[in-house]
Length: 280
Ligand SMILES: [Zn+2]
Image (cartoon, rainbow, N blue to C red; front, side, top):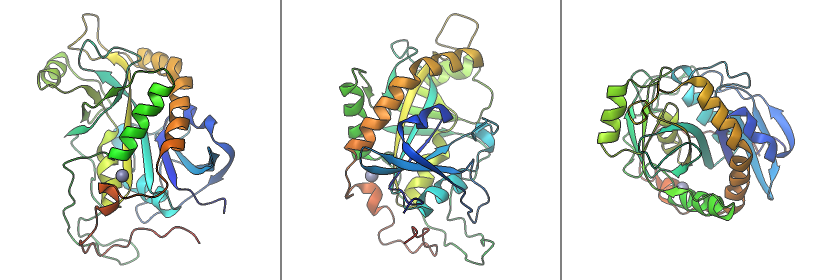
């Protein structure tokens, strides 16, 4: 069925050219509209749903993305594993532009984003989710991380295996003092979209793997004038082809049957909210 997929990719719209025979599928959710339609097709024998994180015209800033709708939309077409490539700033001099980091930890410094499905508030259809607390000590899927690192290395891109992504509210870049503070904590990369994507995936029992493409050295680390939007776009564009190659490799390498911690995230919890059932 064309409207069904097993793997979701949330990323910049330049990235989905690796999927064949793409069908555009508009999905409604109890949380309102997602960033855009899903673009569903096949690659490496797997069904993949691509969602442009900021909308296809890049019209939604990181702080206004409807993250709940995005994750719900992917789950509603059957997605169980999500890949989240994103542009980040490097917080250490050795993590310069063009570096790929597959983080294993996350720090949330966002300020005004809804970051749970389980807030006890009634949905428009009358369902009231319970207040539950999901484990998040290890925010990323171990199997997905393994697949991402090996797919990058197979493409001659020596991905950094592990690191901490700090997510800021945006859309502005950090001040020099903030960047120095982030770096002094030992964190690796700074981005604007990695949270709450990962926790919302976990709350639905989905796997989530973050792939951080470093587009700049953050303001406090470098000696120049600080990060500019043009610089970020330029480095991202220069790496889009190989990022697509890596995504193709990850899709091929992801296990078809899951038994990772993410797949058991909701075991024993009474959420009062059935995650969306995939179409039959
Ligand atoms: Zn997993």
